[in-house]
Length: 255
Image 1: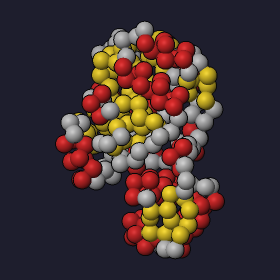
Image 2: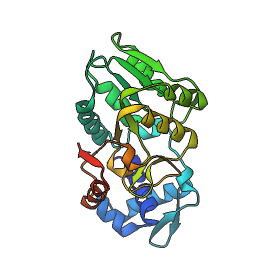
Image 3: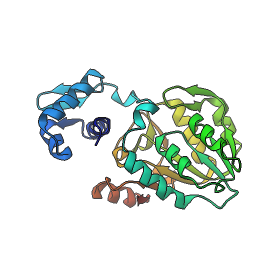
Image 4: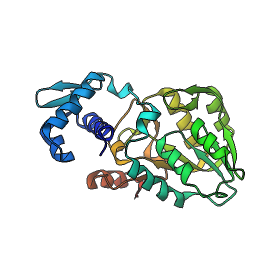
C-alpha cells in the first residue's frame, strides 16, 4: 500500500471513530509503529489529525478538507480499477444517455468503457469530457459553470439548472463518504448541489466508492440511501458495514 493510501485510510478511520491508536494501525497495515508515527506526524502537520499520546484525534473542521484530484489519483488504484470494471455491467444499451460525475473512480470507468458503448454523455468533469470527446461515436456534453481546480469539475447554478432540464438513463456518481445516518456526502456545498441534481435527473443511480469511504460522514449530504439504486465498492468493506447498508435497503455490490 502506498503511503498516500494509508494516510487516507487513517483519516477515514479517525473520522469514523474520532481517534486512532498507533498500535491498532500498525497491526491493521502490518507495518512498524515507527511507520505509523511518521504517518500521524505528516497528517498532524497537514492539520488533518492532531497527535495525542498513543495515537491521534480528528482535528477541528477536518470534514471541510479536500485533497486534490492529482493527490487522489494514485490512491486505491487496484480497488478503483475493479470497481470500474464491475460498473461496466450497469451501462445502459448503446445509444442511451449516461451521466458521469467527477472523481478518480468515475474517470477510470470512463477510460474502461469499450468504444461505441456510449451514445450521449453528460459530465461536469473536465478530464472525463476531454477523454471521451476523443471517441468520435460518443456525443459529450460538458456542463457549464465555474471549474473547481481541486476537483477539475464544473459547479454552480448553470450546471444545476442544465441538469434540471434533463432525464438520463443512468448516472454514475462519486462520493467522499457514505453512511446509513448521513447518506452520501461530500465536503463542498457546490459539488453537493451538482451531485444532487445528477441523482434527480437519472432513472437509475449507481455510486462508485472504494471501501475507505464507507462509514465516513462529510459536511454536506447530496443523497439519502433511498435515492441510490446500487453502491459498488471493493472487498475492503467490513461485514458489519455491508450488513448495515443492505439492512437499510441499499444494494451493495462488491467488485
